[in-house]
Image 1: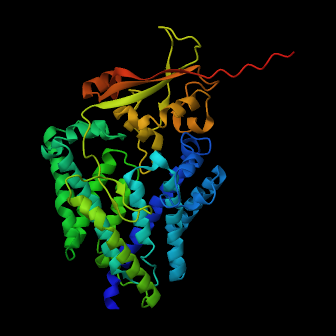
Image 2 (image 1 turned 120 degrees about the horizontal axis):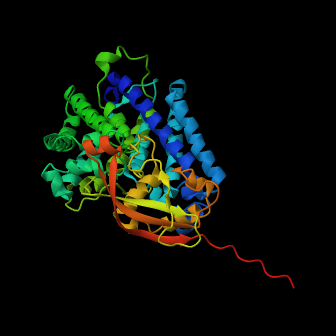
Image 3 (image 1 turned 180 degrees about the horizontal axis):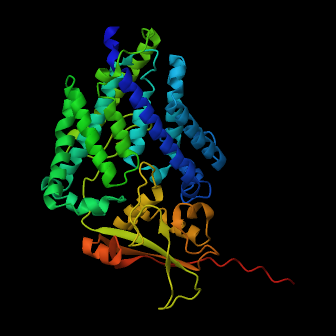
Length: 478
């Protein structure tokens, strides 16, 4: 069936598949290197406890069959290996059915991880990766032309991603309607990057232009994805440029990079691609499978599409347990001031006015005022992100902050690996506390005079000093 395939999109598919494999690689690495402290059997929010509270129906995955830290590590590192194989183009060396199975494998593995990730995996880009990965299973390989239906479903995903993010902004915070949000955002975003100070110091008219361009790209341009070429390619190109601007201005894990990958699938590369490689007609079973997947996605799109049209729009929500079709959005409200939770410890057993407290250093979130924010995206620092939410409201931290502090009090090795600085390398502290500070970017003169990128002011206590548990005294011998 000629209508089933798009011969000119073989390079678009190739670029998309290799880009998605790279994002998968980062996601599995993030899981493999951080899970023990966060969700391991002895972690802050252990997986075994979650499995006892939930069912197959609400959270299906491989860990329903068995959980151990060793098995989780095997799943994550297998995902790394599969991602590298896909990045190297192994799917192009396999028969069509085997290539589809190869693409299905990382989707199943990452779905299993997300299902047990709890709040550490409650971010929109987790669902976005799963929805994109599911569609990638049906794109085929070099043996056949790219199926038109899957290419359109990728555009539908990109439309919901961008349009939903645009709607949640204009509905959620008046500063988006006044074009003033970016006067605050670069300073108050979850994890600033090395250029965020410079973006924050741009003139106000530039910030207004940023906000206006954001509205144009998210509320108008997405409709152009469904127009003929080259207009659709130009629309996707504008989205790519917007995402690159966000890459430069902050750390948003792999959200921006995955959005770029999806947008590149909408670009018609045929003027640059040359003649397509030799391809055969798609087998009937493949056409049936793709059509069935398309019908499923369209049926599941009803609730996310309805969510876009309601005034009570929610963002970053999954409507099915497999995360096949989701709703997205970001920064429906913008913080006007940056609050940071600073975690400190002391080795003094008795606390007094002169007690010396030493701060723990986090890898990504602001801490030391003279430390320039680092670039970590597309890698996702899950604890650092949750610390930002904790500063907004203690309710975000209620399930996990105290267990985190308890692990600091015993110098838990896995927990300390999530940090960049442990002020107590020779033994655990006697007490740990947390305080909230107001952080602001310094001005150019202050930066030159002091070398400080931030100035900070104490606001309130977040957690009163917690003492290291005293080991039980052995009973006296008779």
